[in-house]
Image (tube, rainbow, N blue to C red; front, side):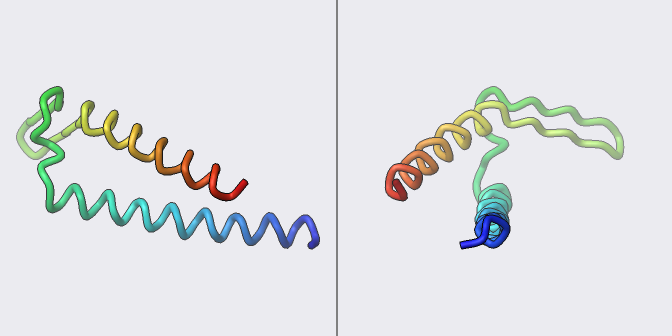
Length: 76
């Protein structure tokens, strides 16, 4: 297979996977209490709200790391 063909297919696959993961994260944020974890920074001013879910980000990072490691090991 041509090098550019291979790279193009992988870029499409990774883009679709990234869009699917982004959609799942978006849905999780709407329906679950991601902002209710301890360690969530919430800055509220008139007309401005900033929420930084530190613990939620760490949990999500660990979960995605485990999932991606399993996928990579299955593909090898």
